[in-house]
Length: 482
Image 1: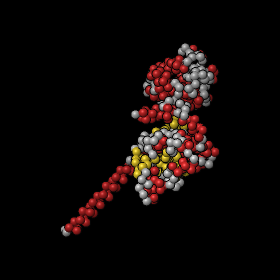
Image 2: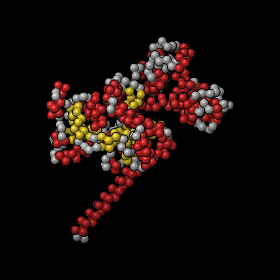
Image 3: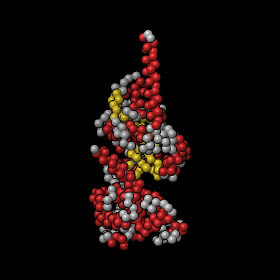
Image 4: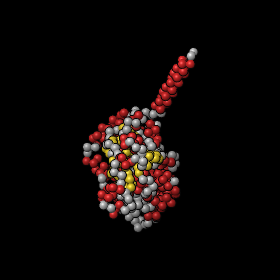
């Protein structure tokens, strides 16, 4: 065999091997994508959303979870009749991998639709249309400058970006845009990249604080941040219109179709406009939130009583965030709150129950919390022999805190009668939910009669949901502090 033929044979073998390797890799990549569509989500009863902490997407304010994308997701999950589980994004560089592995069902993170991303995931219909803008800092004396002088001190054209150092995340659409723009303007743009843990808002803050000179952001986000950092400028547009959407797996066709149908209709309503304006047009509301001491995203504080709750929660064996979620549900952290039937204080004791634990409407917040932990421990003694799983038992205790243990025990007996699991809240909760119906409150196993159990069912679920939000935010603050 001559050298030429040997070369052809070896080359062919290498190409064949490379093709096979590529096929194996692609096959492996596809095998890593879980299948979980709308039917599975409805069957489980939960939509898992990967979402960013930010002043517009998701945060806690005065004890309440809020945010444009969070509230939009909540409305959609209510529409399809499932719970919403929020999973904070730790690293944007791996978010599509996490989505395809099934850690979440959808990504809500102000994502731009790009052809490159469509190779990995699917996008919903656009939620908003925006542009990419350069975020730069105004001169220190900008307030004393005339408008024309201020404008002259800033970069005013994409051509001005030549040789400038701009900091963005490598996997972002901003990085891709800057690479293209460098070719378009015929000059180098120096791009410094940061890891996926660094959010768009962190980079904007760094510009404001003189840690970096330039970054790129979506205009809708940049304008909102400009309210908080008036020394930044976000007027230099560097892209055409960009479509912002949620991301789903390529094999979640029914979910994507469902979202699109709902979103297209909802976007035509006044509710959508009000929601959008709440986060992207209302500067007064924004400033009130971010400057408040219970804006958890920056303060790390949920309530005025965090330290007291942290001190006494261990006596119950509960996370302090769960006790805080219960207190919010009862009183919205208002110790002077007076509720139905004369219920008082942070823990909303009825006068008769409060007297047993040494508190009344004049008692301090600390005394109220201590009394509350004692009452929780009493309820725990009732349920500990009946429900061994500690997480499930917490739900039984919460229900008992709201309506009394007797009605919950009735629901447990109904669950047993109908061959359901009497130590699983989901099953017992169902019968409590329906305990206002004659079929159930007149049943021979029921000893405590009629009860508006649907109120208690909602009460427990809302506390457990808020507990997850509080844990999310506290864990994020711990990571930020490190």
